[in-house]
Length: 259
Image 1 (cartoon, rainbow, N blue to C red):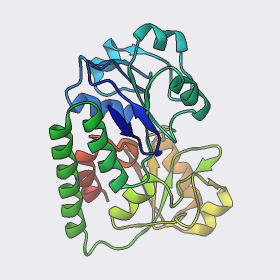
Image 2 (cartoon, one colour):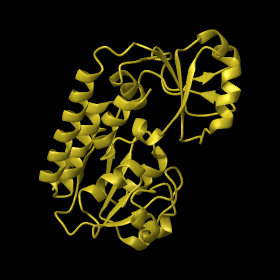
Image 3 (cartoon, helix red, strand yellow):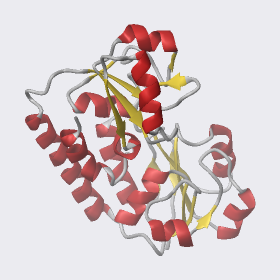
Image 4 (cartoon, rainbow, N blue to C red):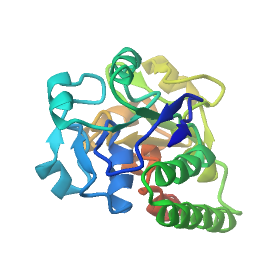
């Protein structure tokens, strides 16, 4: 069957049975939600959810570097990737031999489209459509519940040494805005570096320290508090801000209860 992915690339995908390799943790979790245990033959070392897949599925490398020999041994007839999370050159190399479906997710609408599309290419459309609808309902409920939430200026940190944050063209930015807040770096793109002087002059109302990709801990809260003594600082589960698959089913509630 012919499908077009989120990068507008058209590819041919077998009707089945599928032998899927997922190169994206959040999309791996989605495939599990869609009950594709028998179809998924390979994942990355960062695909930690679900635990049973992480323990038992063949790991073909990380999200940037792959073991091409392991991939070849699995004889996949569908590889699911992501434009940002995976390495472009290696994805193009894989696409010479296998159908590679690539997502491009910058906001909630993109995520729900991705979910429905993955459902279509894996013959699980009914379950995928239902999931997307539940996710959208959850965020609609979130929007109604935060009507009176103060529009805090938020600094979301993803890395240390150097400090790095998120720009306005990222999925995380979309989650920040849906929580009713304003991203301090919404006017910039991708993942800007934040200097210690920036931290002192920004004076954000709220600083969120993500659990990924850098695993911020309480000791880092103390360090940052010295630079931003007026800000509320919280450790947050980065999966709820950056995983755009079935995890979104619980993200709206997490954001509603945060702070």
